[in-house]
Figure 1 (cartoon, rainbow, N blue to C red):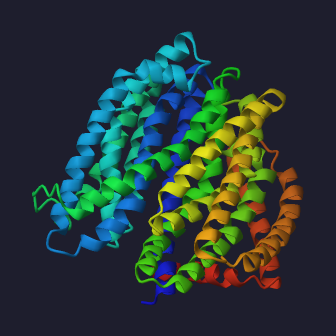
Figure 2 (cartoon, helix red, strand yellow; figure 1 turned 90 degrees about the vertical axis):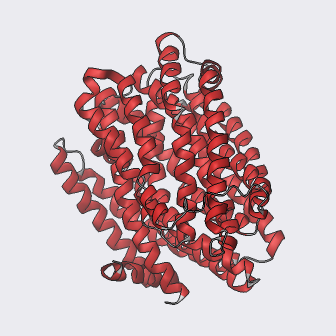
Amino acid sequence: MSTSKGIVKWTGIVTVLLIISKITGLLRETAIAYRFGTTVAADAYLMAALLPQILFLAFSDAVKTAFIPIYSQYHEKKDGNAFAFTAYVISGGIILLLSGLLVFFAPVLVRLAAPGFTGRAYTLTVTMSRILLPGLFFFGLAGLAGGILHTKKNFIVPALTAYPSNLIIIIFTVFFGAGYGITGVAWATLAGFASQFLIQLPALLKHGIFSQRKFLWRHPGIRKMAVLIPPVILSGSATELKNIVDRIFGSLLPEGGIAALNYANRVFLLPNGVVVTALLTVIFPLLVELFLKEEMTGFKKLLRQGMAMIILLVLPMMTGLVILREPIIRLLFERGAFGAQATKITAESLAFYSLGLLFMGGQMLLTRVFFALRDTVTPMLVTFATVAVNAFFNWLLIKPMQHSGIALGTSLALACNLAALWVLLRKRIGPLGGRRLLVTFCKAALASMAMGIVLFYGRTFLTVSGLLLLACRFLAVAAAGTAVFLLAARLLRIEELGQILSLVRSKEKLF
């Protein structure tokens, strides 16, 4: 199988799995919104869940981007499994110690992360933080498992990790949330964290990862991990610190501000979480391979192709989220404790978050490119600078725009992040094909504008109250907009459209 066909096949498989995963994730958020709405309980839970999620994403990112290049050099050698086992023991011990410290200092962490919380909101957040923080141990093991399986070209099992976790939370929230309250949901969430590692355990055992129980403390791979992984963890933490910055400012808003920003952010993250994540899951190991072979022409070509596909896929999604923001939130969340006012402020936040959608997709790709070049420091420094920029924009905009100002501040910070990474990467490896990408962007923007006109007039049909009727009409409007975009893209002869359509047409061959 050629490289291009391999990308299409595995991106298609991972995309399908991630779409289903993200749907279950949205159902999880819908269940929480239905049961707790934008109340103090929802704010406290979402704040308590933030820290373990941030550290998990940071560690998982570090494993997949720093561990994969190192493990790729040793996994087929005699001591490959012993190296992986040693990495598990060291990583697990460090994370377990870190979890214990965070549990002990939970009151201080909550005070720093949510300065606006007092009384019940503060007490609830501390209690649930102490429940959820031990989940970091399982998160860390799950991230390492994903890195190992990706190296073994097993992309399917790591893409399944969110399924049991989301289902546990959904079932508990819907059927037991009223009786056990938000604290019970926190315990269910911890069980979900554990399931993300356990579902990957059989695949690890199949590859014999734990068959060589030797401690290779002085293995050269361990030393390389000690050098590469800490900067990536810091970089990943800094990336997620933007969410903490948003919630710090959100804690200063009236009750429900954090919940509204969270629900909007979940919808905002969905396109990149499915499309870009699936693309990068397959592209990143190939970038690493091309760099190791010193094939920089192919390296830059793959980078350009990836960026062009992100532009073509994400730009119309951004347009749709901005124009159909209110029907989307009504369809996903407006039921139970989540009322019309919650829909209004969540939809407003979604519109301004969505302006940064393309910037985030590009930033995700360029960060992986630096990691493939074994440069973990540059993205870390850029991301820390971005957090400072994000805080400045939030401070500047929160007073005149409230929750919308926080969302817009995040989008502006993402734009600065992408611009900085692009300039630094161009200095590092030379021209990146910016002119060709600009042509693709302009054509995709024109096609998105045509789609946007259809969606703008089509949203007048989305004011109905029935959930089923709204869903049917929404699908019809979205389908019409998509058709117009595809037609416009074909008329404009956007080169990457053929690659994407090839991926879609090959779906029946994926399995």
